[in-house]
Length: 398
Image (tube, rainbow, N blue to C red; front, side, top):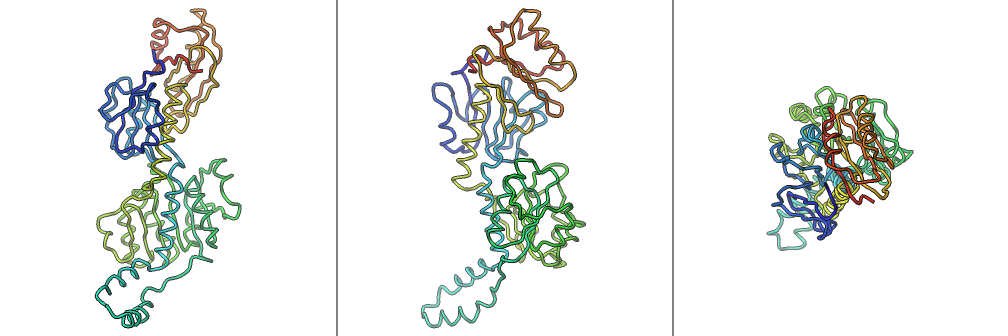
């Protein structure tokens, strides 16, 4: 039986201390060498299926993407996988704005040119050289230009708002726009019905969609052909969203004017119209701290109350705490499961105070509050129900 004061958290990577400090020393044991982990907290570590140890109930990734976590294997084992959407959104937004500006003004070229003049000691000569050569680094302003934002979630909506503040016209495309995201989006962002129309009008296109089978290679040769000639593509989402071969061909033909991304790609690193950064999107002190705190809070809430927020594989579930004993049950999403569970309770004359049942795709999750402590016989009876994946008791969830 799970009880407070008995949770082990295994960490990978350097998690911001402010996040780790969320785990009270008297209630949690936290560290990289943890045996028998109840939960794992990581950033970029590539987690293998072999690392999914018995008794593991949750994994939290301090970041938005979970491509380094074997989500499908976790689902089959009843392991809840959390991410931290929005925690690093401002950090990425600021880097996107940096990319926009660097793609418009040859600041890097100018800086490198001035550095090449380090041996010039005469100030008059230095000024003469600078004035004579500065025209080589002439750029253009963003005001009045059009930015196309593909993906209008936490980051995309922030980028859209910032671009409006810079005086740009903003087009947006997101077929899966949530109600919350729609509320965040400024009304002056023009919603587009399809990508080709957005590409044809935008001077700059910035990508903010997750890496999914449906989005991998979405910027391919056909998509790039629809781009406005000379336009700029910015990718601060994930590299596989852009087909590298098609991208290089479009740059070589000079149809695409410039590519700015956070993911170095062999064959493009020294291209004169490509600027690549070493995955700096969330590399700020603030973003790392925000992600760590959010991930820690989500793990604590799940372990202590059974509630699920920001999971990528389980439904969002929250049940107001009451006095008693809480049973958390995960199962395959097949008909009749809740009825079988409550029947087991009824056979033993156990009173149900409250319950909630939610499903997501092939998985379902239940929180059931009982008036008395369930014994091992009851728990085993629930485990024996076909399609039940995991059962745990949370004593003192209130």
